[in-house]
Image 1 (cartoon, rainbow, N blue to C red):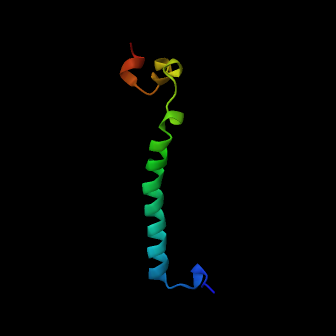
Image 2 (cartoon, one colour):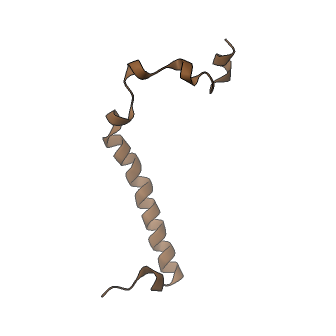
Image 3 (cartoon, rainbow, N blue to C red):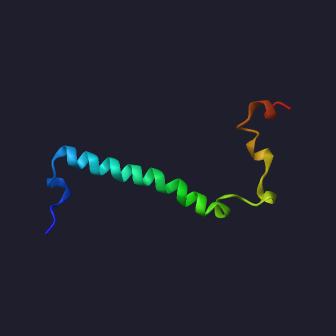
Length: 61
């Protein structure tokens, strides 16, 4: 029988939570790297006019 997490002492809960966050922080970039082709749009979809509102010096031209 296992003990529910809320019965653990605070330092143990903090360590488990930090390990969980570290695992998430390391695995997400790995997941994105493995699926990079599904994240990057095709060249035809890239429209620089859509970025003009974000880049002030381009908007002034």
